[in-house]
Every structure is written in structure tokens, then in C-alpha cells.
Length: 316
Image (cartoon, rainbow, N blue to C red; front, top):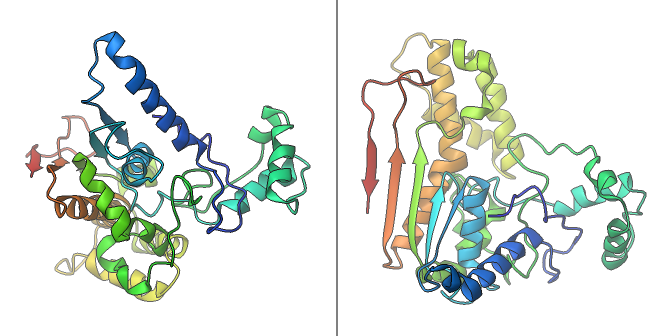
């Protein structure tokens, strides 16, 4: 799969205007076309193709499964989503034109130019200049990645009603609800699907010191408040309070920093990866295709989270 850091600049300010922007995904589609045309020469079977993605790659696979730009069930036939889903809150870039305008200013291209002229100006700039743009996305989000372009990822018409999105159950925001339209969900049934998660999905949200010594309650509050603020649009206080209440062991009279760390890790892991993956599995299995969900819980003897019981859970 293509690296998600490249091929995703989207300068379009109108989410309902069909204007190609997900060139990274289109590269993947082109590669699958090449596979269909040439793999038989290498002894492969073009009628039995499985694509696999991890993290952002898994989100890309999810988008390919549901994209109108992919011929129905012809380019691939099975998919594996590892630790990611198109429903993950980080899977789609919100307001991607904002980051494109930052690149434009750094490259001395007027961000107010019409989109075709802005893209022409950027294409004339040296690659080093574009790569040197100082851009920082809000924590728990990304500046460059798949976004709604109306071509590979369709915005849908009309917009999805608010009541179709259950934030507390699914862990994704309204932006990702484009994948919940019936016309999109029905495309999942074209493929068999294996999905899975691991024990500590949000592990890299913590520093080495956090992992070794744990964190205090005030730091947990800052982490979760930042996550909620940068992920959701409405009812932020209620969402934060619900998360803290759900992921606090109230039976412990005193919270140890290690326990607080583990509770925060579990909350972030569930919201960013586990809940979206499970929701995707539910949507797919409802279409009566072969659906498999695994939980990889193995930890090595010297791993960061050693356990007595190590196991792999596989459910159909």
C-alpha cells in the first residue's frame, strides 16, 4: 500500500465539489489494476487477490472497499484491516484545504487562487520547498491523509443526519459518518473481511516515562480533554465526563499512576481503534459475508505489558 504521507494534498474548499485529491488512494487503485493485468505472468491468480493494511493502511483498505472508483469486486476479493478502520476518528482529514493553504503560503503561492491555478503554482515549486512546510496537525489527528473529494471518497447527498451517529458507542465523529450511508455500507458485501486489534493500540500516545512510572489524574484529564476537543464537535463536556466515568476503576479507593495510565490507554485505544473496528465488523457481518475478528493479546517475556496469560481470540 502507498505511504499515507504522500499523495493527499486537498486544496478543495467545497466538500460537495467533485475534485480528485486522494491521489495516494488512486495510486493504490492503479497498482491493483496493474496486478489484474500482469500477476498471471508471475504465477499469481488475479481472481483471488487479498489486500492488507495496518493502521492508516487499514483505513485506506476500508476506503477502497467502499469506493465507487473501484469496480465491483474485480480488483480484489478479500481484505484484512489490522488496527484501523475508515471509521477511526483519525482516518479522514477534516478541513484539508487549511493545510493546503499553509503549504501554498510557504511556497509563495497565493492561497486565494482558484483551485486549478493554486495546484498549478504548487506543481511548479521545488519538492524540497513543499516538504519543508512547517505543519503540525492537532494532537490525535493528521494533516495529510484521505479526505472527502467526491471522487474516491464521496461526500454523499444529502449530508448524513446527526441521529445516525452514535458517538458514545462508536468512537468516531460526524466526518466519518459518510461511511455509514446505506449505499456505502452495501459495498462492503463485495468482499470477505478479516479485522483485528491488539492489546495496547494507543501505546505510542505515551512517553517512555509514562510507560515506566504511570501518569497522574491531572495528566489523564489533559490527555483525554485534548483528544475530545480535537476529535468531536458537539457535547464535548458530556463526552469527556462519560469517558472518565467509564474508564475509571471506582472500586479502588486510591488510583495508582500505573492504573491511571492503563485506564487512559484503554480509553484511547477503544476510541481510536477498537470501537471503529468492531463497528466495521458489525456492518460487514450484517451483509452475510465471511467476517472474522481477532484480538491479538500476546506479550513477550520482556514486553512493555508482560502478562501471565497470552492468547489469541478469533471470532467469526
